[in-house]
Length: 66
Image 1 (cartoon, rainbow, N blue to C red):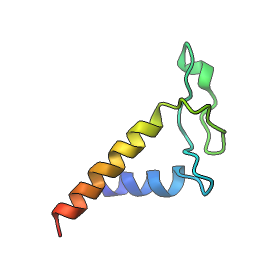
Image 2: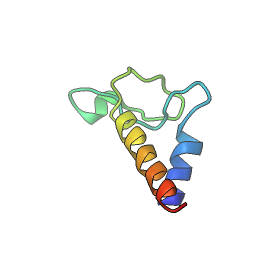
Image 3: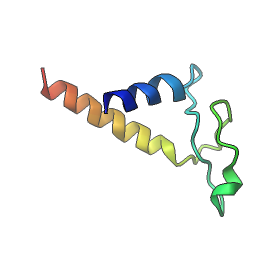
């Protein structure tokens, strides 16, 4: 879990706040391709909510272990 969070937060999250490697919306997955780190999102990306929920759970886990 720690390795996964570190990869997402260090590799996918960009300095400008965008989240890379996330599929955009579309009728089919191919409509949002290619999925790259520097693709500007259309603000309906599927991964943003997952990123935020994961960060929340990581925070709760760290807080509970202190």
